[in-house]
Length: 380
Image (cartoon, rainbow, N blue to C red; front, side, top):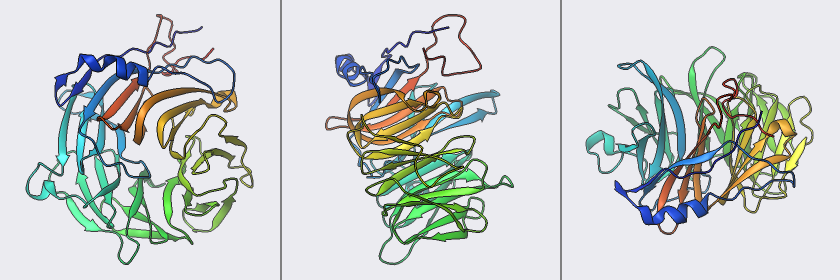
């Protein structure tokens, strides 16, 4: 069964005002589809909404957008919520209500106004939000109450910058965050106490750390040609990741913990099979023009999203042996990407010369026979 992939623009807002004259600009930004190879592919994503904001600072490592799923207790319904950095504040975007609310930073007052001097990264999971800055400071907030955020610091010394934060659960179910910094180490921080209970030293600045979904391994990449896979408990090096020619900025695990993707400044993405990590199983790069700054697997494992430094997002179909992909083309630096937990939608933060925006893509089903077991639909 096949379904049409429809690209359609719903609306654009800029500071709460409808801007109809920007329709042609945005449609041109998102209308291109292409492949990593020459096979044809229609992909089940379309732009459903574009929220525009004042121009924002874009951190080089591009981890400034995060999507999460919450249950609204009063209404007993599940909804998606997206948090993003903008003008050194954190804003909450509700896709259902189409509204944006500042939850940290200016123009809020008192404790809610205190954020790192220059936000470089952020992460959110469940009801936890953790924001990091270039001076090593952080702000932690419980998003359920949005009260009494905690301000502190993770680093001290000459190299302070927090490059990335990734939240996950331990094998016991506890919530923790891996904080990657420029002081040659990764910290595992307990999100209940905000205490560092494990450190993983490296020989280079760490740009990104990701824990495998089975919570047995972590992948670490940074300002070294080779990444590393370590045991969470013993901290022993399980594998050295070879294949890139320049420094790496991002990594991501497939949901079954069998595949690991790494993205590099050499304009390539390496795919490793954890059963044999001595060399990449695939190297994707024939249609990539810039540094690979962010990677995300969908929750179903069928799609890998690759974000370049600017202008391009690639959505790779893993069931095609990583050979087929949709390319989304727009204008502007990419400040972050995030897939919704149910794999129904994709959010992309974009910063251009004229305005910054949050692009929302979601699956459009055509026909009543669409398979509900695969929310992304069928490729053909």
